[in-house]
Length: 219
Image (cartoon, rainbow, N blue to C red):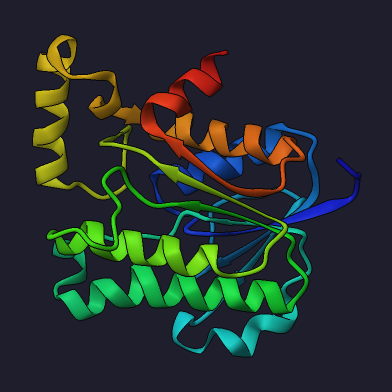
């Protein structure tokens, strides 16, 4: 991997994204980390360049992108979004617009977090949108695309999600009986897997499922 590379990150304030920023700073892969965010990032480091952007008008900020690798950890929930339309805007439109602009600006590799169960033909709207964005990203001619499909995410979020907290409790109690494929996974572990993929020079499209993410990080 050549030196003096720059990464750009969206979704940096979420569970995986915040861990990713910390991991990126602890590694020596990139000389600069650009962040596109709707609100300022609480990170004081000379390597991190935070840009507050309007994702509805992302094209206005495209000239700021000076990176080789893009990491997308952006995502919401149906409850937080409030409607299917609002959910689709965040999890498909914003992500797709960002990817297309990155490609225009010379970004070579794209690292995307979706979800276990992502399937464009799914009966479940959440999984269907996740599958649709995967297909859309696959069609863009990046040198490499890495798609991460974690199961239930574990870790401390800034905002509380009652449904997820309940699922986490269930996961803890019944983990010995849950197939490894479906067991919860720490957000930091997903971030670590993204870093490991970034260190590789593999071209093409690669999928990383929860069970495989754990194995990749622990190996």
